[in-house]
Amino acid sequence: MFTQSGELVIISGDKFKFKTKFIKSLRVRIAMLLILFVVLSCFFLQLGILKSYEQRSVAVRTAEIQSQCTILGNQLVSSNYLKNTDSAVINAELSQLSNLYNGRVVIIDDEFRIVKDTYNLQEGKTIVAEDVVKCYRGEQTVNYDEENRYIEIGTPILDYDGKHVLGMMLISVSTQSIRDNVAFLETNADIWSFCICLVAALAAAMVGSMLVRPLKRMSRSIEEMIKFDGNYLHENAYNETSLISDAFNRLWDRFKLLDESREEFVANVSHELKTPLASMKVLCDSLLTQSDAPVEIYQEFMGDLSEEIERENKIINDLLALVKMDKTGGNLNIESQDINALVERILKRLRPLAEKSNIELIFESYRSVIAEVDEVKLALSVTNLVENAIKYNKENGWVQVSLNADHKYFYLKVTDSGIGIPEEETEHIFERFYRVDKSHSREIGGTGLGLAIVRNAVIMHRGAIKVHSEIGEGTTFTVRIPLNYIAK
Image (cartoon, rainbow, N blue to C red):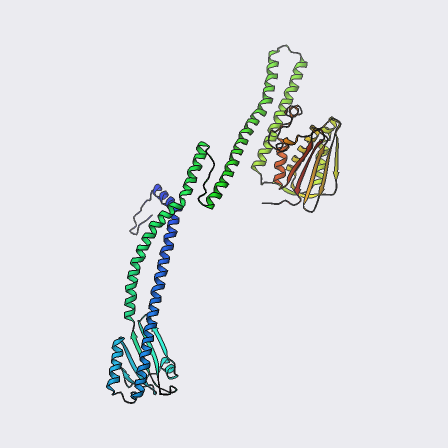
């Protein structure tokens, strides 16, 4: 930056970072807020007290002068001073009043003529002013000029019956003494305010440190949890820290669960990809060791290799589908689709697979359904559900697909007469690479990713999926998806 003289001053990055870190410190901000509160409180308190004192002093001075004016007015009437100003006693009292309050007394008769001026400046002159007119109407006037520091009081002089105005007194007195007292009090108040602010600054620093101490403990605990997998947070100094601790503990549990799931997922992926490769290697090694193997053996082994490659390819495709859903969870190509036609196309494509095992494929539609969906992802989930129902079915069994809707959702049910799923396994079947019957799954080429893909696709459509199954009786998957896509 540049100074006023034009010199360039370079602030080091470390120094700038330190200043930024210092200002962003919660302890510093709490201390600054407390200090600011005390400073503003002292300022407004001092301002209010001094202002009240000044107004009170002016009111008391005004009341004293008005009382003096009432007494003096009676004396002026009794001595007929408005007609003859030679009374030494009255003149002495007027001079005493003027000297006592460091002011000026002007006596005006009923013809607006100044008959007496203690400053001897305007005697015999005529004066017409707003306050003079009000006094001749029988009103008392009081004006306080704070800037020039004087009070001007107008008092009517009434006759004995108090009904007729014979003249008026106009008194101007200085308020310099009041202002001096205010200045003295203001100086003392400044000193006390400085002392209070100094004490407040020390107290604010202590309070700020004390308030953020639980947060520092939480920070150290979190660092220990990260480094050494320590215990949970248990900071209950405030309600807020208790809530944060609970929320962080839940997050920590979630993180550990995700970490375990990640490790398990990596292990499963490695195992699933390694198994077909191991089989292919065994087949290849067998062929290499048989230099004069007949053509039939080569054809058989090549067929087995082709099946293993297809299995590997299916695992990779399913993994890519899952990864794509995870990365583009909110990027759906939503369009209005005829769900009836979509399901019919899927079943038509899967009928040859069902016919191989002599499985009857039935579709029941209760009404025409039009919904806002991503056709590709929904078709993938429906295909996986129906394909699983066919693969894990009994020979000569059946698969029934039904479609229904209400005013808000459409419902797709896939029911089969298959082998069923144990009750304790149903909560895990949507996990990646989870298989109920691992040996049977590998026999039919399952990857353990199909239901995970189904669940992801349904959730992306803001829907829900549930399963009901009995061993040996079959399984029913029920999918519920909104007719209108609900964007977040």
